[in-house]
Amino acid sequence: MMKYHNKFMSLVLIMALVVTVAYAGDVDRAGTTAGVQVQIPVGGRSLGMSGSDIAYTTGVDAMYWNPAGLSAFDGRVDAMFSSAKNIAEIGNNFFGIAFNTGQSGVIGISMKALSFGEIPITTVQDMDGDGGATYSPSFSVIGASYARKLTDRINVGLTAKLIYESVPRASATSLAFDFGIQYKDLIEIKGLSLGLAIRNIGTNMEYTGTGLLVSARQVGETYNDYLYHPTSSDQLPASLEMGLSFKPTDMLMLSAVYQNSNTETDYLRVGTELNFANIGFVRAGYAFQLDGGSELGNSVYGLTLGAGVKFQINQTNICVDYVYRPAQLLGNENLICLGVGL
Figure (tube, helix red, strand yellow):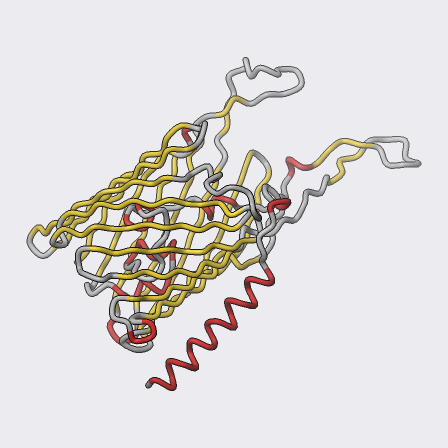
């Protein structure tokens, strides 16, 4: 068994090295990727620690942070709904449900949708939108996940995601994959666990549709025609996250994650969770933006605070979590999460 574990960890480190080289962080690429709704976090527990725990995250909450944790819940069914108001009052709603099939593993489905409200339609003739016509963009992510326990210490998971965006008469789609690993009791230290998550590896996004047709006259012609105006084809915000979490007691957990992506500078996320008899929880975390030598702490979201309660009604486990994230110069974010398990 130890020989198997050593080979497995060697494979993990090789994969992490390859992805890190392929998707190295670059501040000059900020704002150049598409499908950025995949980066908007969901759930209450892990987000309450600023996303620093990818080693112990479990159940539906893990479908976003590390799909390997999907296999770590003990019940038959786990469901979760979260709702938040992000920057500029953009709503972020998520629902996920997972089914434990026993030795065959755990399967799950999820959907995340953004709500922008009604936006006035403006034209050259009506630049202020006084005509009263409105539209609402549609941004969503639909996922299907599978995870299982390879051993009593190793969990693996995979999520396939369909990313969709649309505005009037134009839309874009992309297919992406997340892959995750959790390794418990690292180097034989009880309570020390390793997490690895590779996220959003997929196809480029490019808008198509009749909204991109323009009336123009080609060189040498005497009449106008409708010509297609191509848009850019952009990569998704792929990332690699490697994290360690340590639980010296059932009451305390300390965690840290290093994040490397192709769309921004690297991040270091740290957090902690206090567990009071598995009934009440208090969480805190901080995200440090690593920008090549400048001072730390330039992230839009730095501090994160969270709390939760868990209780049982008949044979149903219910968990309610709350997260508060102040954003620099952009207001505050409040998230409510409800979890139900059988």
